[in-house]
Amino acid sequence: MKHVIIGTAGHVDHGKTTLVKALTGIDTDRLDEEKRRGVTIEPGFAYLDFDDGTRAGIIDVPGHERFIRNMLAGSGGIDLSMLVIAADEGVMPQTREHLGILTQLGISDGVIVLTKADKAEADWIELVSEDIIELVQGTFLENRPIINVSAQTGEGLAELKEKLSKLKNNLKEKDDTLPFRLPIDRVFSVEGFGIVVTGTLIEGSVKVGETAEILPGGTKATVRNLQVHGENVDTAHAGQRTAISLAGIKKGNTERGDVVAAGGTLGVTSAIDVKISVLSDTKRKIKNGAEVHFFHGARSNLAKVFLYDKREIQKGESAYARLKLYQPLPCKRGDRFVVRFYSPLETLGGGVILDSMPGERIVRSEKALEALKIREAGNTAEIAELAAFQLGGVFGVEVLCRRADLDKKSCSEAIEALTEKGNIIRLLQGRYISAKILEQTGEKCIGLLKEYHVSFPLRVGMNIAELRQKLMPDTDTSDVSALLNILSDSGKITMSGNNVYLTEFEPNYTETQGKIREKLIKELSTAGYEVPSPDELAALFSKNEKREFQQVFESMVSSGEIIMLSPQVYWLQGVYDKGVNLVRKHFEISETLTLAECRDLLGTSRKFTLALLEHLDAKKITKMVGDSRVLVSA
Image (tube, rainbow, N blue to C red; front, side):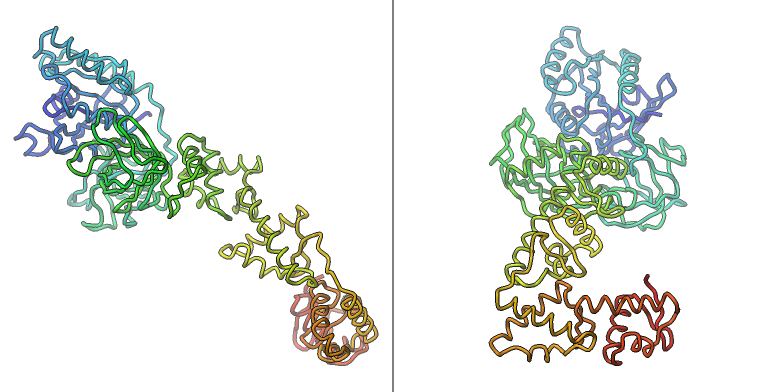
């Protein structure tokens, strides 16, 4: 079922509350002071039943300029507006201000209601109607009908109700699958129910028993009871005025302006990137660095405006800006807001949040502006791709959801589509990276290896652990390893054992180094299993050759020509392979291998036999069981 909120707007004493009562039979002035003064101070709430069996919530907001803050608190979640203008007074200051506020809040449809039609002559009503047509030109109410109404005689009430019903039917149905969110406009305690909060459920649906989070504080609570229009329900839906009884919180844990949301689904920020507009009928402008009153949902805040590509915004203009908020704000991309002048209080304009989690520094560049344009007008996939790039590394679905300000379902669908196109790369199950970031990381990897090869021309490559640390120091080892595997598959780098090197790289020996290498191969080949220690090998060369020997020896070890069994035992690769094969053949006919048996297989001493067996243990090819080894890897 479609759930709709209709809101009134207009100058003080233009008959908004009386109109709502005539339509619904409900008096929205609930405070004694309101009844005594005849002025709505706090937003009032009612409901309107239509002939098709559907019901719409109605929010009656204050009209007096001193209560604009209260008006804004009640305006969140309005789908349709009734701009109320008294026929005997016509367009007044708060008529203009309320229309500007409704426009900035993104309300897209509504009706114009000319109240107190019984108190004005026909020719005067005609003049007022002309003023109204001029007023709404260029707004969402342009070309909308003006309905003359009298709450006293009943004139126009049926026509108004019919028009609201038609407009309601034209609205798009809200997505119930989104995480729920409700800006709190009232908090009170009820005996037997504890703390109760009310507001308009602007997204998703909430159920009794569900866990909720109170933001920005982050207090967790359980939904104990739900009411919609005074009736208990098991589930409340977006577009309904909802009262939530919360278990697990105390008085003072929440206040008006907070947000109740599904746990872990809404971010809290102290800075936002926005598209901000200045009303066309204001005499003021917004300068870079200006302080403004900021209104979002039922929350008010102070903010400082930093413009991206202008020094000031004149009336009727828009610009991209960073707003630094004085208090934390629960919000997401696409939320609307209103700004008012700091002193004296006057509505300046408003806009839409484009990025609820921007970088710490403001970067004034074409790339930054292009990113904001994508967040403003791009589709889901474009925004997800941008967010993946902005993350700058490996991410999971939830992280991308938060950075892109997308719900999990939309974000997952976008990831799948972008992965198929190759714009996002899947590294591991549930782990992804932007294709552009992968390319940049690949270039950085190649640069690191080039520098390494210049510094160590005889080493076959950089240790993989060292490369991971230098390449992506704050990323999980498994993620970086998966990324390196992709680069290896592309042919740009080669991984061998614990080393990584550029595929085209080969150790470049000088003539002297080449002779040292040949001498080492001959010496180790002749020695077989019973090799000299590194110090004994070094002693084979003159003092002038010591440094060259060390470089050649390290190069041969890193390339795998020489295998280190222990710090004192190094075998040529061919000798090593021969010894390992003898061990494997033994295990084909026996389940265990003792040190003595292995020594007899190799025909060498205990020292070298033990070095091989401990090396195989370290590589998890064999393991000790009692006094013997067993094979654990084929």
